[in-house]
Each structure stands twice: as C-alpha cells, then as structure tokens.
Length: 255
Image (cartoon, rainbow, N blue to C red; front, side, top):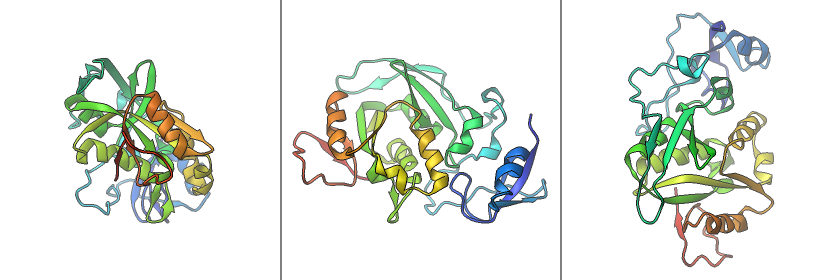
C-alpha cells in the first residue's frame, strides 16, 4: 500500500472538500500536487478525520477518498450493507426484466470525482454506467419506472455558478427523494458547459464523461428530446421549461 499522510485544506477544493477539513491522501498526491499548488498542508497523522459538513442536514453521511484502500478488494465494507454483485431489476411498466452487475470504480480514479459517496460502475446492456453506492442500493430495492434523460448543462449549475456537484446531486435525488425511480440515467451537455467550469472541475467532468449514457453536443436542448425518443422514455430531468419546444407527451422533472 502506498504511503499516506493527513492534509488540511487551505481553501475549498471540489475534489476533496471545504477549506479547513482534514483528509487522508497518498503522500505522492500530497507532495506532487496539493502542497505544490498551496491547496493543503500536512498535519499530524493522528489528526481526527472529520468529513466536511453538508449544507443540508438531511443529506446522508458519506465516505471520503481517505476511507478507501488501494484496490477495490481492499475497500472497507464494514457497515455498508453491500448489494449482491449481480441481481435482477424490479421493473414497472413495459421495461424488460434484466440482470445487472456492478463493481467499484477504480480507487486511482476517485480523486477525479467529488468527495462523497463511494462510486460504482453498473453494467447494463453491455455498457458501464457511473453511479453512487447509495443509488445502487436503491436500484436493488425499488421498481424502475423508465430511463430518464438529464439536461446536464442545466442541473450543473449551483447557486448561479457552474459546478459538477449539481450532477452528483441527481443520484441522491432519484435514490432518496423521487417518488419514482429511474434507470439508466442518460446525460446531455452543451459543449460550452466544460468551458465554464473551474480548471480542477474540468478534470472531474472529463472523468464523468468516460462512462456510458453521457453525450456532449453543440446544442443540448434539442438533443435532450432526441435522446428521450431513442431510449423510449417520456421522462426528462431539467429545471428548464423548454418553452421553444413542443413538449406534449413528455414529463419534466425538476430538482
């Protein structure tokens, strides 16, 4: 196992958390990036690790990068109540019943995703979809209504600023707050969305786009409806009212 150190963030850093929080990272990552960029400083290894507090008290407690080992097999599963590695979907409506499987996202790539839930890959129809462990757990127990197409450029704005954090809020919303459960998730982004992100979030977005169901186009609004037709779903998740489009027959879900 690679050497690890405790660091305290000197400023907000979307890959890890808020300024002042303490995290366990590899020494190489700390030396070659966090310290060099003046993002964090090393603190004693016995410093108590406390995950950053969320602004919403009802949001679930999460596991951070420091809670993960160097390989998926070594990930601590204590208290996680993991779902079976293969299971059959419970479906509603006319969806075919299929068996899906899952595996951990490689720990070496976790630093490219926002700190929070452990990430998994869900294998469905020979494709690999990114999800959170929390979303996966709900997938094993809830009835899947239909796929949903997500207007990523729209939900990827938080408090008037572009941020990838809004994308990962979608998993929590569907898993815990939505009356109906949707799977798979299909994402459509304007090509310009990446350009609006802070430099560190561009890497997170690029990692997000590695997985199935993500499409980046010049004009996302039109593609949202085209994709909904192609995957045969009426469900679209967006805060945009799409006033310039004929939306009869579609169901718009708002966060």
